[in-house]
Length: 355
Image 1: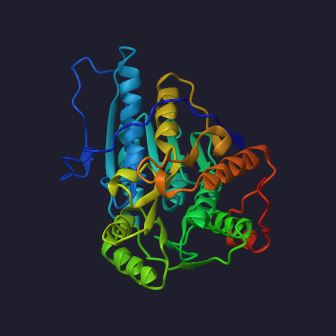
Image 2 (image 1 turned 90 degrees about the horizontal axis):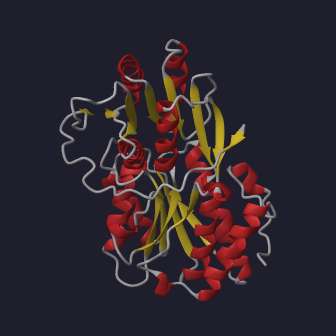
Image 3 (image 1 turned 90 degrees about the vertical axis):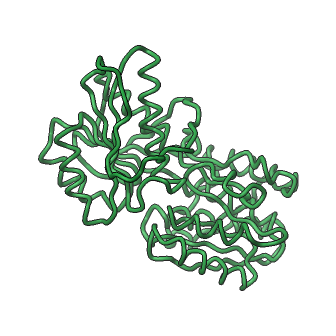
């Protein structure tokens, strides 16, 4: 397994990514001199417009296109949306017939990627959010638990009730990593403050059901939670909607991309997973003939995960909390703190003194 650094490519705007999402496949306009190189993104269930996971992958495609255009090089970037898990194989087969490189998003598509890639050895595949073996597959597994730990630690300082809620879309390993890391951080913060804290959690069962997500969020808020960490793709927009309507110091925490602007002042921070940067880097590498298959990991030390600058909520965060987060980050990067990635690891986790 390889650790990978990512380029300093700046964040890209996610607005208006899907102004024309009436169709399932989209091709930006190009000049008639466009180079014959195509990258096709296969979304996870929920499609584009989730202001999160899928949009981040598409933003990476657009970023790669712009980077190459600045060098006078042209590529086509397209997407195919997956409405159901049963779409994965067909979508991957279609993309494999047309693309030089296929970007597949989400843990749930892993088996389909492995199957289709085996029969298309000339096509390169970028798989985000897990580990798939194959000479023509570059898989990226994020240490999102590390950034989630920081969010949990921060939340323990900000909460007034001592109760936080976690709302997963589905119970799958990448989501479990976020949740385990957040729990560990929240417990650590509680210990540092000599305060009893607890976490509530209810799983939605879908990444594309914001109505149910909002209902769950309201239920947790009624149980005294004042911070909700949503791990739910498009469903997570329902959690943010529920929090946005609440008076006082009640917050949501965004995920995957910077969601702080979705409800200014009500999103405490967002736990970033910079898949946009990795997708952009890998498309450019494929174009330049530098693609290398393998399983790669990326975390805090690589700049691949982290927290936002809390531009709308900084006034609600005590200075001691910010200092604790910085110390914890340094301890994680140095290896002094190993953040649990699973609930099993969480059971044996002993909250450290962050000094």
